[in-house]
Length: 213
Image 1 (cartoon, rainbow, N blue to C red):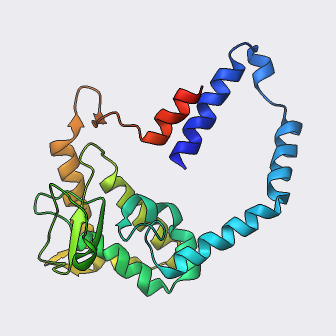
Image 2 (cartoon, rainbow, N blue to C red):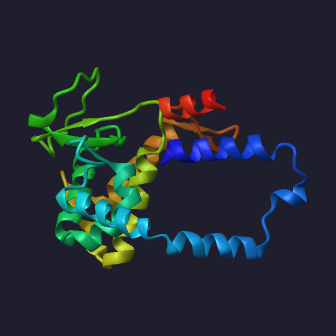
């Protein structure tokens, strides 16, 4: 999805550069017509059915990935709760907190040790999840925030507030959330700008789209 949005955004800039501001803004009628066209497209239901079938088989990002990523599960958590038992989703969320590191930071995702088949310079381990290995893209800063959003969406849909009091390694989930925030303030917060810092990253899809333009 990130690649598609990047290409779409660059395409809009390219083709609208010679238009006036008034011409670039579609009318409400045009917006409504476009929305109706999209909603009436039968391919949407087909794609949705395929996505739901993938989710029924696991919380990973597709058949090509054995890992479970926080930002991906955050994206499709509502659909996952419609296709899988809430207890399964709850367990997948709690595993992230089980993988939390002693300094409070969170991993991007996790995988069973038996499925850890790729080279990683810095695997993450936790005594609270001895059967799993964690991994992290250290240039990114959305691991903790993705998990907070994921937890919020889960509670909104299930009303399972009890998950916040679940004890992991002697600490509740609420306490572990505070450790996450403390980590970000301590390690990733720029007081001058009031923002979290991270690297500028772009994947191969974004770069190849830019080259095509």
